[in-house]
Length: 294
Image (tube, rainbow, N blue to C red):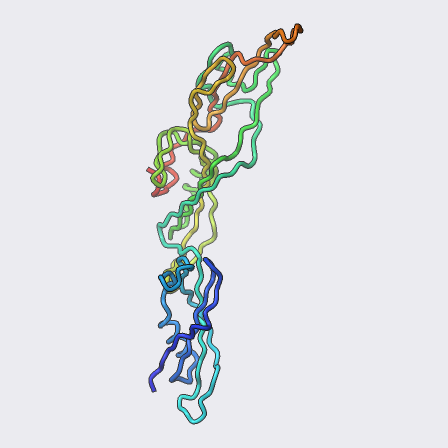
């Protein structure tokens, strides 16, 4: 008697966009392993068709289960098997693949009083060579907080080779830093100092997968973290108008002005100068080793 595999449609179960399972009845063998293999082979590799439109890229896993559900008295082979084939919506890592994910976030800050460089200024201001942030007329230094992120981009890359010690040293040297020239990432252009590299997360090796099985090759998962801050132009600061490049920080010097309001004189702080500071190092993002950066 030939082995037959019949889909048991009332046995389907799952969660939208997550895990799923299909069930099959197998006849013609008393061998549970044979029954399991026959059903798994007959099951589709993915569930993403017009007959199941609510499922998205759900991939067959290599872990079916089998159990006997009936014995035909007098028949040979007598056993009928119920095989459950599972599916999962996990990301399928392949060598060299890069996955780009974006999110908008604002978290954390750092208080700074010194910059790498004063890139421009207008009006009255202390010497540019001091590179002091928040200098005040009374001689004190205020400094200010800079945000650690705005729009975030996480790039996950899989590769067969473990990152070398030299590459890890390069990453350490570049964290944090901004792009020293225009780069194109995943088709999007970022001009100088608009892209902040915040670090690299290196995961343990995991096995390379196909839609059908798990291969033996170890893949190293690397997740790069970036944040974006676009250039701004024609920013009004009191009577001054300034432009700001990407992650540069704007520092405003305030003087005092006497204002007559309601017949009374008030002494009010007023902007008299603006400095733009480069607060992150500039580096060549080609050294990151991402295919998606040009």
